[in-house]
Structure formats: C-alpha cells, structure tokens
Image: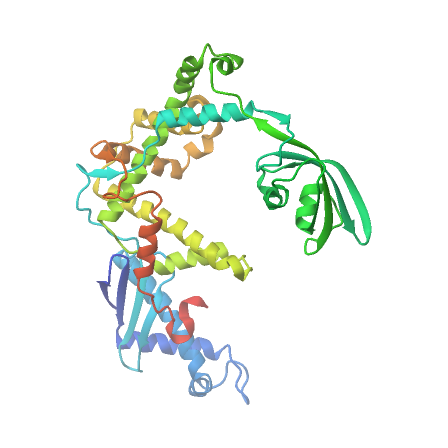
Length: 447
C-alpha cells in the first residue's frame, strides 16, 4: 500500500492511497465470501449460493460495503503509519477500482492549521484597556443608584418612573380588578408600557389591549392564554420618581467615608487588582488578535459547520435559527482562532512550568473571581488538577512572556482592530471556499 499526502492549504490535506492489485482482489474475494453467508438467494439455503450468483444479484450493495471496509482499513493503517491526525470525519473524494487492478482511494481531511508567524515581539498591538478612574466612576454611580429614594411627584409620567395603578382586565366577559399594582417603567419587562403611560397624570385612565404574556408577567395572573390579547383599563393613582443623591461629602459620609476624595481613594485600592488583572487578559487577547490579523489562516470549515450544527440542532424556530447559527459560528470561530494560535505558539516556544508561575496564575484567576488564592484553591480543586488547567497554565506563562515584549496602543482609525474579531472572522468565513462534502460510494463515512 502506497500513501501520498498533499497539503492543499493550511487546514486541508489530501491523502491518496494506492492498494496493490493482488491485495485488493484478495480482500474483495474474502469480503464476498463473508457477504454470501448473510444473503438469501432463491433456490438455495442461506449461505450456500454460488459466489458468482451472489455477486450478480447484489453487485451494487456488495461493492458499496466492500469500499467502506477497504477505506476504513486502509485509511486507518495510513494514519497510523504516517502519523496523520485529523479533526472531523474524513471526506472520501474518490474510489476507483477494477478487478485485478490497483485500487485508488482519495480522502480529504481537515487538521489544525500550521501558522508561520512573521513577528512575535516588538509590535504595536492595538487594544482598549480598562481605565481605573472609569471603573471608580461606575462603582460610585452604582452606589448612588443603590442609595436613591423613590418620592411621590405631581408631574406627568416620565420614562424611569414607578407608577402605582389600579388595573382592570376583561377575561371571558368578566372584569378582574388588581389594586396597588406597581409598574417600574425602568424595567425591561415593562418597556411596552412606556409609550402608553408617558405624559399621563394622576387620575388618568388609560385603555389598551395587552397580550396574555405581558398580563401574566405584570399581574402575576394565572389562567391567561399567551397567544390571546385582553382589554385593560389602567387608572393612575400615584407617580414615584427616583431621586439619586448628589455626589458630595455628605453622601460620602453617609457611606462611612470621610469625604469624596477618601471614598475614591479607598474604592481605588479595592478595584485596582481587578482592573490590573482584567487588563492582563485584554492584552493577551489583543496579542492573539494581532497575530491572527498579521498571519491569517483559514478555519476547518467542515469541522466548524459540524460543531454549529450540533449546537443548534434542537432549535426548531426557523425565524431565528439562522441568527443563532451565525452567533454560534462566530463564537466557535473565535475559540478556534485562539486555540490554533496558542497551539502554534507552544509548538515553537518551550514553556517551563514552575511553582512560582503556577501560584501567579492561581492568584490571577482568584482576583478575577474576587476571592483569595486560598479560597480559589479550595473551591476549584478539581479544575486545578485537570488537564485543562495544565494547558491554560502553559498558555498564561507563554503569553505573559510574549506580551511583555510588545507595546500596546489605543485603538484608532489607523489601528481599528478591536475585540471581538467579528469583522475579521465574518470576512474570513465569507471568503472560505465552500467544500463539496458529498461522500462517494453511498456516503461511506456517514453510514
């Protein structure tokens, strides 16, 4: 058996297998003998019919199954002998054989791409880092909202107000009244009411129709049909508006700080580690992005499509299945890009795992989960002992070394690269050639 391997592109290889005529014929006769014992031929007991008659009556089926057996046997042997690794099921492109002649088997496989990086260090890597001052502002703003008060107002209703109302709903010609219903017009579930209630005043009665789903959520009412709509009257009894406290020293003192400056300083100490370690991840992701943009490679399309199909096979709603498939494909594509970049980096760089590096990685993960290293070790023991942790530790060590040797610059029009890689991946998927995945000889590998 002769094997020739052709690299079609970064991810596709063609394996051409030539089986000697004597071996092919011997295998066929052996297979035919086995098949004859399993089929029935009129006038003969099962397994006693002449081989020539069995071959004539079941020629197509016998050949199909023989091809399948030969492909399985020969391809497995070729993979073992030549160290061939592949991702998704092989695509059998062609099988040709005539009795007493050589058999030709052509199989196309997908494997992880081999990437030759033009440059690994000394680069300017665009990325958007988290600014500590921005995180402090967000945190203080959340404190202000948490300490806001709801006050009765006499104004017209505005978006974000809370409305107290009496609601009457007509169900099967019977009126059901709900008193003191509180409607938060800031909540996403009540967004459909904003246009209907905005600019209304206390004492106004608003008539509308409401879907069964909305009524069930708003009124916590059973027995309604989700598909039906119901007439509703809503009397406005009160309007409450959130008052957010001013950011001043009195507000800071209410929260047991000396003043605003003291509050910012102490919040800074609390948030700094999280910001620092989130930025480590951002730099690493930006570095992987830069390597992919500068050294693009195709993705294994058939493998990608198979994963997407498995992830979305339970989605039956055609209206959004296509959207869901797109989202999954983008997500899996990003994961593939990171995986293949890292695997190629590790193939050309030795990674030394030390106890110090392991402790640093655990501390990094612990800070991201807002816990101590001791708590992380206690709660994530099975993860730390897993192969996944070992691989992610190698990734972290290598990326820490490489990212330190590059400069990170703000994203601009001149350097528009930004996480996630939606545009780049979309263009990559659009330009990848559609593959002919029709399996020859009765879809040999899909049976």
